[in-house]
Length: 205
Image 1 (tube, rainbow, N blue to C red):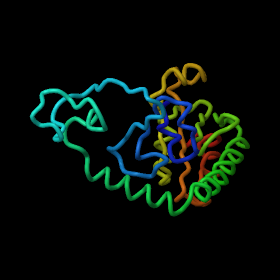
Image 2: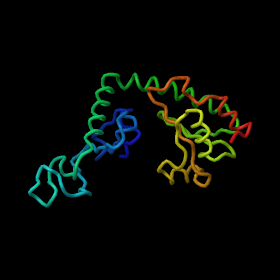
Image 3: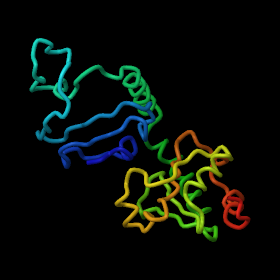
Image 4: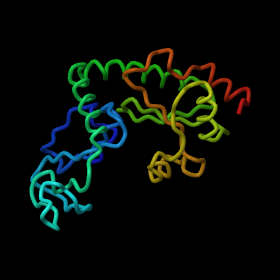
């Protein structure tokens, strides 16, 4: 299971999956450069990287047991330490506290965006804090640049998922603008009607 966006948001019954791949810098609030795999069953993949484990230096082969089997080379210790700190913070703060805050902001954002003519919002019925949108007649990258100038950080493009954009009908137009609401965002950080309205009605771009 690709849990890049989900890890840290929801509980999962690991007995239902062979393996869950997660990234440390998304909903786990860790730094870039660290990710992991959690096994839910006895299934194990073959290693894809070999050499320099440090645990069996005399061997030319990777270890056959334990986590060292998948840990070739030197580790990104700084990123691992950062992820460890973020996991402690997540445990102390509590998943419910974080989700309640981000859900409220996300619902407010979706409601405001859906009320603006020319803006199309892409969210499933059961969504997390990730919201995608397009503005009629304006390239996603132009929206990103304009809102970036307003100190609103977001991403534009295909978001490493061209097939998803082909399904949504946004592939040829350059994808969507993706907004990710986090625990440290506040109401005043949200996209406002005035900014989007300037983009749509006044041809600001």
